[in-house]
Length: 620
Image 1 (cartoon, one colour):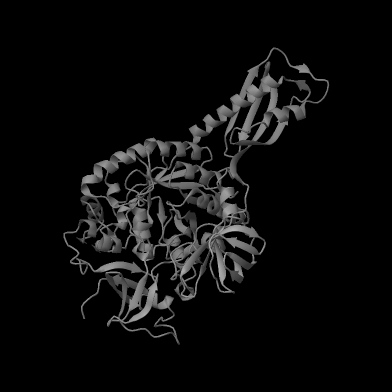
Image 2: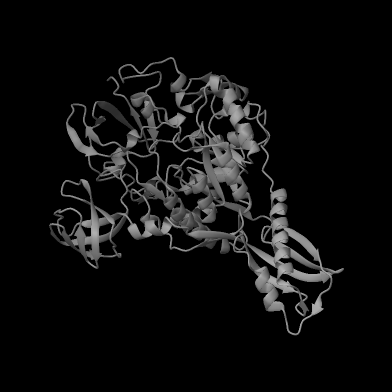
C-alpha cells in the first residue's frame, strides 16, 4: 500500500442506535446521528447513552461516529450546546457536523469539526475559508459538478465529503426560508415543512394556468452509482448517503450497495485509495437501490449544467419504486401482466392513471403473470407498474442480514512451560497471552486440525480466523486449555483495539483567514452574537441576521427584510423544456408564479447564472 493512499469513507445516516449499528454491520465506515437537540432532523434525536453504545461498537472496526449539531443556534442556547458537546465528547464521538460558526467560540473539548452542507460550500474560496477556520472535513453542496469538485480539491487539503445517494433539497442547503416564511417552521432548525414536495399550479401574471397540480419543486432522488469512480478521481473522500429519517431496511440496502461499489474501485486503484475502517461486511442479500424508497433517480449536476437531464418527479413526491411489469389485461380484481421481475403475495404496486395521478394497488395472490388484487380496479393495458412495497425483499431485510468480521491470524506455540497464543488482526493490533500447564505431552498423531478447529470457534465475536500457524501440532493440549486461551486472548485483542483508537483533534483556527465576502445576507444564517463575532474577526463588516432572529416580519406572507425564499440551481423552465438558452425550446411567459392553496410565489430565473430564485410576488 502506498504511503500516499487517500482514506475513503462510506458515511451512512442513522435515525437511532439500532440503525447505526446495522449500517456498520453492512459496511459503513462512519455514521452520522443527531443528538437530542440541535440536529437538522428534529425527529431523529438520540441520547448520549445511544451515542456511547454506537461509538463502542463502531470503534471495534475503526469506524467513526459523527454527531450532527447542525442547526443554527440562538444566543440563549449557546451554553446548552456547549454542555451537549461535552457530553458527546465524553461518549467518544469522533467529530461534530456543524453549521453555526458560534461553535468556534464556545468552550469545547478538542473535538474535530466538519462543515455541514448547510454551510453552502460551492466555491474554492468558501472551502478555503472554512478550512482555515479549523474544519477537518467539508461537506460540499449537492449541486456541484465534477469539475467544480476538482477546483475545490485543488484549493484545500482537508477531506471533501459529497452526497452520493438519497433525497435532494431543491434549494441550496441552508438557503431556504420558504418553510419559515409560510409555516413558521425553520429548515435551519430541523423543522422543514417540505414545501417543495407540494403540488403547485404554474401561472402567468394574469392567473392563467400553464401547468396544473404538479410537484414542480419536488426533485428525484440522487443516485451516483455509476459516477463513484469519477467522484473519487475528482477528489471526494467521504461518500455520504442521505436519510436520517429512513428506516433500517433502507439503510441496510443502500449501504451494502455502495460498500460493494467503493470496494471495487479501491481494489482497482493500485494503492491510490484505502478504506477508512476495517472488517468485511458479509451480506446475505443482493443489494439494489431500486428496491428501496426512491422518487426515481437523477445524477443532478454531477456532469455539469449542460448535461443535466430531467431532475424533478413532477407527477408525485412519493416513492416510485422499481418498474416490474406492464398490464396486459384488467378485469375486476384480476390483473394479467407481463412481469420483468418475480411478484409475490403482498407486493404493493403503483401506476399512473389517465390523469397522471399516482395510484396504488395491493397484490393478494401472485401466480406468475396472473395477479389477484385486494380491490377491483381497471388499469389500461400497456400501463407500467412499479413495485413500491417489495414484500420478499422487505421480509429479508427485517431479519439479521449481515455480519461484519475482523480477520485474525493466530500463532500457537510453547514457551517456558506455557501454551502461548499470539493474535494479529487486520486493524494492526497484536497481542500475546499464555497459560501455564504442568506438561505438554507428545500426541500420537498430528493435532493441527484439532487445534485450528478450537481456535476458530469465534462465532460470538466479531473475529474470524484467517490463518493458524500451530508450532505444537505434535503436542496434545486439552481442549479446555485451548478454549480458555482463545477467549482470554480475544479479550486482550478487544482491549488493545480500544486503547489504540485515536480521535482526530480539532484543527487550529488561523487568525489571518479572510472571509470570501465583507457582507452577509440573511441566508448566511447568523443567529447569535458569537457567530457574528467569528465573521467579524475574519473581515466581515455587514451582517444581515438570519430570518429566524430578524426584527423584520413577514407581512401577510408578502415581504421581509430580504425577499429570497429559495435559491436553487434547479430551474423550472429547464425542467419543462423551456430553457431560454436552448434553441427550439418551448416558450413560457416572462413572469411565472407558483400557487398552492393560498400560497402564491414568484419564480425568477437568472439565466446568466443558470439559477432560480423563489420569492413572494414582487411589484412591477
